[in-house]
Length: 418
Image (cartoon, rainbow, N blue to C red):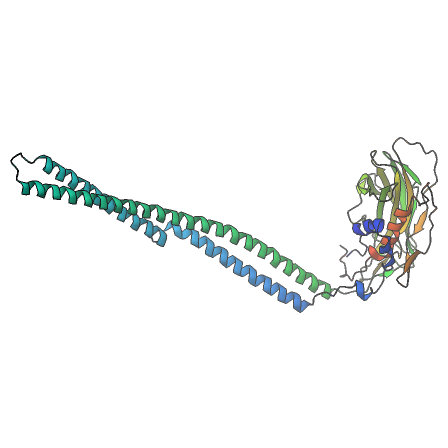
């Protein structure tokens, strides 16, 4: 596990909230103040959370299956709503037949009335008229019954369609619930696995090693936007023991002249081994490939290249360097402080002439009863009409990072460096 981490938010906070620097702890600190420590859940608590998440997921899977079955049931002729539609249609068909018969009875009764001879008696005329009246009344009743039966068919169809749409929507909701439950379950499982892994980790705490040094040479104190500059990083093992694996660490941070606007996206850092011409981009954790091994008293050089986009405004920059080591026996450590090499960024087209190399400023902090934090070494000259150092931001970020906001000690498994 790499023991040095860059927190971009620490830099941003250092820009706008200098008070942050008052509460950070030195690199390789063993403990944090109680107010800054968050209690981690226990393995038992995480196991309960994982079990609960599993139960929710299992229930969601069952609910989704039930929703799918409910929709599929509409394909069956025996579904209650389908049977209701069929019954309504049967009743409507009978009503249609009854109405047709009633209408025919009216036609027949009217024909009988029309067919009466002039010699028909009053009794015959009355009987025919009564038959026609009764037929007409029955036809009206049959027509009303047919209209009601047709309405029942429409209602039954709508009820079945509405239920089918609701069932389809229920599947969508059930699938969303299952997806969320699965994500929660995976997160709970991952948290439990990570906690168990950390609990099982063995090895000693990483320790500071002042004799592991990182030195930059050839980095100009002024870099013009739109140009590339090459410099060198030398990593030296000044101890009397071989370091099995050494990871060089390099991070560049830049702002405009106000010191409040980050322009890191316009500044790019690459590296190459001393024996190679291929340039590699420094990874997003600001590490380069390991030097394996670095013998006692030996050093290794890494070629560096800094590129500043032509669109970058005039401003300030700082390049931080450090190194971490890991041994096969589980021991680990690194340089106690970040060395910050400050430089000015000149606008594109500027001709600064010959400028001296950037000089290092150690970023270690010594907390003073929680009320202030002071750099152990390094100073900033106040420049510009505002009376504010042009490099104040860069140094503020250096202090924040070097003081433990970035350099975090981890317990590690033997052989696990990432």
